[in-house]
Length: 237
Image (cartoon, rainbow, N blue to C red):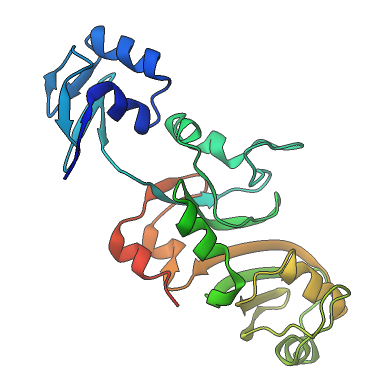
């Protein structure tokens, strides 16, 4: 358990600068468990803390872990260059908290994206040493053949890789649809593997990371949710 002054609590939760947070409190815009507090020096217990700011409830979280159903044409960057950034799909507080994507999905790729402000978590989840399987649905330009499936399972050589890369599993789901499971997480890996195997990826969707699935989360495109410990445990390989 720990106690922080109310202005520090608000700042830690991404409500703005210390000065702005103090103004919110003094203006009576902040309540704790339904009771308005207008003294920013008030020391509050953070464990189990529920804040109301501008009539919206926020549960205090020392670190945030988020799942987003990423739509197409959004960049996984805090400084996007050609398309809106994925942070525009989240409340502004998360930008102040310096939440960032865990790994990246191409701007035209949809599906499950993890985000957090926990540096060690981001590093651990992004590490290629963890071998966490990720499930993708790839729409192909040319029809899927058994030879293509066999080649992806056997491994294909990419120009900048020392050894061939192989899918953990590869299942044909339609005439132009493959379900591919990868562990490496290399740059543009699905698209490059399909190109190296003589086909082309026209659309890509990530439906699962480890044991965490978009279906179980119940998210629609563009929606997000906090991840609790039971869900985070599903990410462990």
